[in-house]
Image (cartoon, rainbow, N blue to C red; front, side):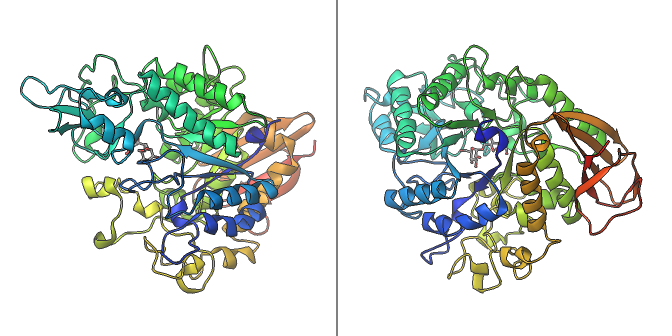
Length: 520
Ligand code: ISL
């Protein structure tokens, strides 16, 4: 079985993992210094959010050079050193490719905007104004407001699905396409093990730019992006040939390079990104758990729907959190976050773990004066801001939690003196110990790593399922609520529990999850 099927991926938000040079912002040397934490935790691969030169309007998701390292994060030599150090520890390293848009600081955009007949004009998406001089159509940016920005120099609008400083690239242009594929090769040649591909489903837009339909469910307070449905601006059929070309490039390298697509679509549409005609991404991110109501029947339903929708040969994957969404500990509370960890790490498929979640880190309230996220600055107060989930990793009880010697770019969670890696390392009941135990079990038991999935029970607050491989049967039983729950389980040895000791037989204690190996 390939590493990306049996392994666990760990996402690092590089600004917030470890600072090595005292500027309050994390960097590559910092990550290298902390690799042993990841080895002790037991993950297999690290995905680092963008580290390329960027004016940081969207903290690296606005790339100004696809083939270099931002000086705030380090140098190419630092990158090579990190990659070698990861590989020396048996860890894979994945980068974040941002192909839908570049920074407007990218030299390509500077050329493109310089005149209508510049050879790179068509590398971006330029349209004439509507007859009234307004934007070409009603498409809305994911960060609010029209997705079109007027550029007086040449009298046309350019399209930006995100910030106006993030201009969408025109993937219908063959020269742009080649240049971007070369950027992928640049990093594969250096030895990276794969990529997470940012907003893959956005990459191609309808050739005629028709208006998007209004969203009938839109209510004020949802965020302006939801006012229209992104019918014509995303998920166009032509995107699949591009994903297939990226896959062919990945497959042309030795050693199981992997592509992971960031795609927010209903399950049935998501599945197309495994590839219908030709293979596309190995793992189209499955975000169902991020949006899920914490209810046994609901969770069982979405697991069943997802498993049933998988195409032949398609390998599942699960995500509980990322740098855009509220943390699991804040969504379900500290006690249930332990149950959620058991769920993430025992479902069938590759799990992706967000840095800090292994400590039970919660969202951090950010004082107005310290807000950094452009999303929050554009549409404040809707609860869509992302700073709360991007705060520094707490390592120990020394100043600034061992993250930096200077005031960090975002505040630490105030609980850092007790909730940190050092404190939890020595505590067998800690969230960190739970994650280590779970990841260790996944490595020891093939039933957990690659076994089949079968639902046993989803009623009230109880979700129970079996993983089976060959003769090995492992049962996972979760109490998703705060009251004791009766449950009927086969006889077996308890391999792991989220609470100390053992409750009464036939009863799950509040917030208890157990894993047992069936003995008969
Ligand atoms: O914005 C959203 C919901 O509020 C999402 O649907 C959005 O499309 C998704 O979060 C895309 O995210 C990715 O691309 C963005 C970047 O800001 C995010 O950090 C990244 O994960 C633009 O590059």
